[in-house]
Length: 356
Image 1 (spheres, rainbow, N blue to C red):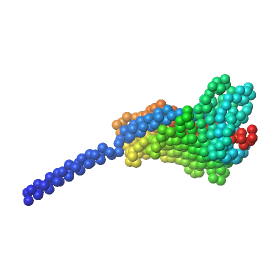
Image 2 (image 1 turned 180 degrees about the vertical axis):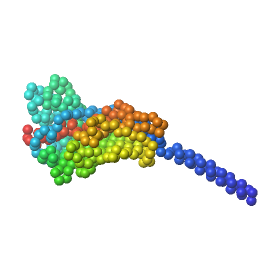
Image 3 (image 1 turned 30 degrees about the horizontal axis):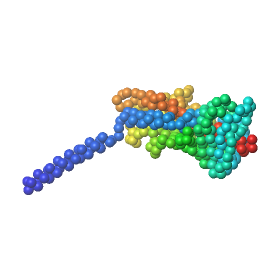
Image 4 (image 1 turned 60 degrees about the horizontal axis):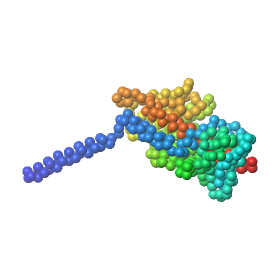
């Protein structure tokens, strides 16, 4: 009997020991502090942006152009992929008047019934004003950039009525750099829906979405595979005094951390979906009036967030993210307006449509 009691008590002690070890193990995997989680999240984001910026496709996404055809010109086109399908190879055009030529004059075309392939020097895209200008160095350039467009539709009636899609694989120096996917719809009855994403060949994807309505919803996301590294979401309500609207709710996700700001200026901070009631957050907007503005507030532009951590230390997101915030801003702006696609694929399409 004593032996049985001893064995039973030994079992109890062993069980307590195992449970104690299990609890310790569970504690080690419990939600980390806000400071640790945000530090980890920003470090992973910085690593991702370093990888993205080293991708050849980032050179394309860095191209900007302050003017767009749609904003300045009244015209109407209906261009399906079947109209523009073919292989277009850039050739240097030596002519003093070449800056007035249609863009298609700078390309030779060979048949392809299934897609539109544009082969040209990446250098000619770095300055969009150079596309129709001849430079002595052009004859030595190689067509090291290829855009293989497998889905294309451009039905444009006015700035307030168009339906546009462009899906293309991007190859630079004979290596796949990534793929582009744009879907854009604007209608007097259906409102505005815009989605643009670029999937890099090294596993990262950047996405921007915008949907009109009340509230208007926009989001900007950076992912590694299916894991969200960074995501901003903005809900705005309509307001006649601002082009974009009045901010209703803003949320930012960096790794396991989520910050939410509501219209009444109250906020909430979560780590792995667990509310952090002691977190102290201050939203810093870099304009005269953070309620009435002509653009979207973003960490990439006009907004910073100051956080006081559990240990009493304070930092801003711009400090934690560091210099790579410039590259994040480049992605953010590029996905709003994909200039290189509009400046080449669309212009060739216009030249074909108008038989120039």
